[in-house]
Length: 465
Image 1 (cartoon, helix red, strand yellow):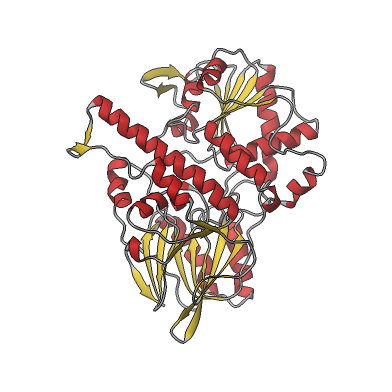
Image 2 (spheres, helix red, strand yellow):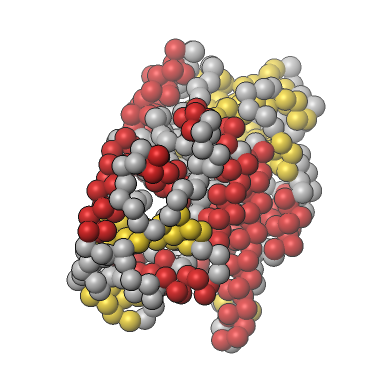
């Protein structure tokens, strides 16, 4: 059996790993590389996995850096099945179409402005039609049940706890006279998170491919987040100010709304209107409603007396652009949860433009803000911010709440690999989806769990196992 690492190897995006036996060629994930367009576009345009010869794709979860280039793979000739959980399939369908829509809009903008990309007309990697056709290739796999997906290949999905539908992938592959067990973590989540189940552990395997995103740090306790939400929103309400919360449409928005719903039930929240201003988040929240059966047991308990954990008195989902614009003319107090998460695009940019210069308002940052983004400049509390081409003074309060990360941290990794070690560990461990510092940190955590020294593969490297 050969494994070739074609993405998220020595970096954090573009998850894509090829497994080849004497009878099957399977791709684990097919994500978009993310970053500067000139840097990542060549990577996203070319496939090194021979798409027409693939027998199947297995998708761990529906974040865009794991599923976002499936339509490109289809366009390059892949016509086989894509195996995933039902929730992942439903979310990926939405995420792929949204990605295609953005690309097509970018292409139309370039055409209107007469802009060219390296001397050629700018073209999307794939279209919405490609995304729709790709969605028809999905085949559902239930959690915790072994399923034969190809001759000589069995698959079992276990809850990863990262986002709705996310799975730890277990494979049994016949290779000649042997059967090899391969585990791929996808992205592991945290224990004790609201909304999502804890990640599930696995038994001994021959090969383990694991993410390492935050293995070099510890996250704040999630239990403190509700108290912080209440404090920040109520303080802003007393000042008659607005609270602007940039949040990714998938995962963070649903978790925020769920926590605010809990505060509403506890009658422990000041009465203030809350608006979710993201059409994509609305569609993804509907998917969460449909799949509440795979969420944390606390959700099941709440559903016994509350038929919608993503709604409460005072919450409004904004549908149209006109309604979004009207919020900027509305006097506080109120809360706006709006995409995107790093403040670089989406409707939240307009809400920030209309809010940062007023000291009564609050900007609540709930996730990591990458370097060179508007979100990072807000976290750094720069005295002036450039938004949509104009300078604005930052007079609004900035509150940073870090307890909502969806990724496992060093403590979670120690627990998960400790449980694996009790089951006999792994023959070989490959560390992917992490920068060099975090991968090196995880290497130390897992070294006692592996028969051979852990490996940090680089793009294009192959290993016979």
